[in-house]
Length: 152
Image 1 (cartoon, rainbow, N blue to C red):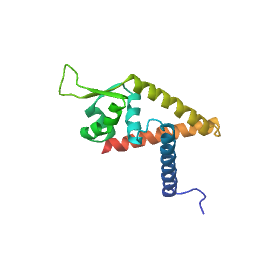
Image 2 (cartoon, rainbow, N blue to C red):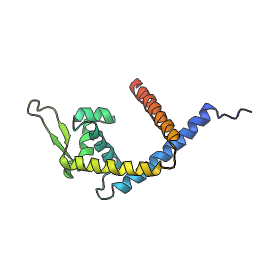
Image 3 (cartoon, helix red, strand yellow):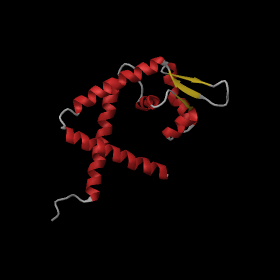
Image 4 (cartoon, helix red, strand yellow):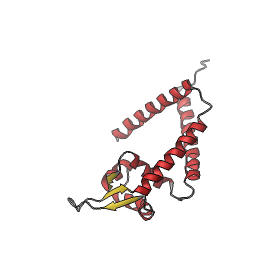
């Protein structure tokens, strides 16, 4: 009998691992976001602004795989909370832009520090080889998922 797991069994283990990772991540995100009371969707929306300080609504819709009106609905509380600002550029009034405010930048910085501390603590039991393997595995997984997404 072969001691190695077959591919479908390994995929099932990965599926369970990812599910548990998502559940625990949501719990942690809720814990560190306690005072602001933002939804997980709103937090992920804000995290997009780590890449760029402003986006067209249509760009955000494409990145998130939702409609522009859904972007507007998702962003309403963030506008009210003054994390982001919606505006129309003078040179093209048909376009709606969303940019990060100073309060939003501070919030992302604080959340980044909290996430880094959490991960450092959570991963402290792993040695450097395990961390390198995990990092490489995540890079490969992200590449495969991006490739899959681009096929659609």
